[in-house]
Length: 504
RNA sequence: GGGGGCGUAGCUCAAUGGUAGAGCAACGGGCUUUUAACCCGUAGGUUCUGAGUUCGAGUCUCAGCGCCCUCACCA
Figure (cartoon, rainbow, N blue to C red):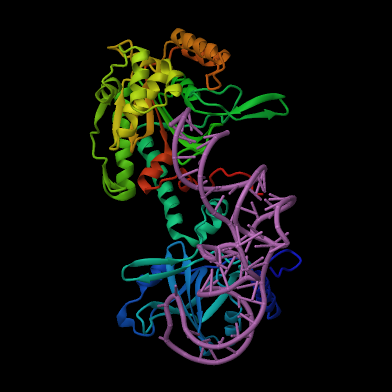
């Protein structure tokens, strides 16, 4: 590569030469402000065919996304957040200003003014009479060519490398309107979730992200250090215990939308920091939370897509309530032939091995882990349509209340869609003595080497001792809901800046 | 963490172990209604990094870095 002293290539050197040429003729390469009268989309709509060659004058601003010079004439497209509009630059219209046009580059930000007309090929276009350079682009975006044909939009080249798309999300967004659309949809979804809960009397709150003691889920935390206090702090793995303290405090209905942090593996459905919605409702139980989730998620799908069905990989997902409710025990038994409440661990392990689990691996399963494997193997991945799996075994659910009709079970449900957990909810355990003994169990597991065991939170037990009303609680993975609604296969496509290794 | 794949021009990709190429982008010239504009010409490379095998490595071997897929764990 023929580089200048700063290590840039010849392509960038050419843009810098253009910048210098513009500065030499008194054109500032970076403006301060610009007032537009129309977005691109509005400009297109402002033209009527009866107007002929002299449509209304518009002032638009945006980034140059295409550029075709034919000598004394140049065509290009300007893109703003609403879309694109074609620009037409004529030497005899612009006079001396045409020299500026000759030093523009693809990706520059400009503002232009002029009347609308329709070209010979039928496209509504701005005949540029005034031009202002707003920001010079010194580095070309990795832009492919786009051809709009009758059978759809065709892409030629462009930014396709996933690593570059995530690391340089700004370039991905600048080049791909469809990427911008995902995050517009994400914002609309979160706005809907807030409004939904606000309308039902839930109070939005903020609880600590830096915590002296983490809890509320089983996961390994990130640890940091507070210098002034000289003590370790943990990034929260869940909001749960703080939100329930607020229920004790009488706020009755609270929710929080924020980031949780879990120091675990990353893959297509896991990012180390992710967005969780948790909400808690006093005097409610898990059946109330099921109604809430059903209304909230189906409402979100309708808000974002206009309908209640989604096409995903050839399957139609139907969000029309009510959704099927399958009991954990019956669902696993239907596929495995075993009732997990009465079957022996040996029987369950043998059944898993028959189903294809490695024998050596299966021999290590016991207790809650074994039940979890039975669930994963015989139920979870088979659930495609929105479905509530309800009444989980007690061993799997240390924070949930015991089922009022079966002491082996808890009042808990998960919402599954496409074989994935989207939400998890309980009738919350509010007996402080019971909670204390469950923390004791966790402490023993921690001593035994379980790095995900939950630490004993004495302050939380103290709060429960003051009396927490019966409460229904729910947590929902917002990134995963975005994935479902936007049809994304990787959580990285639902997060603007997904976690990446340090760039070398 | 285990297994598999990939890394070449600004972008997208080629190249039997034998002179590293193409399209687009860039630069120069031409063209006053084009739209993947077109025509003529020019330039552009530490083939991810480092060792090794070889007369000779983009290609083969080893190590490292990064990304993707997959399995395990977790939402």
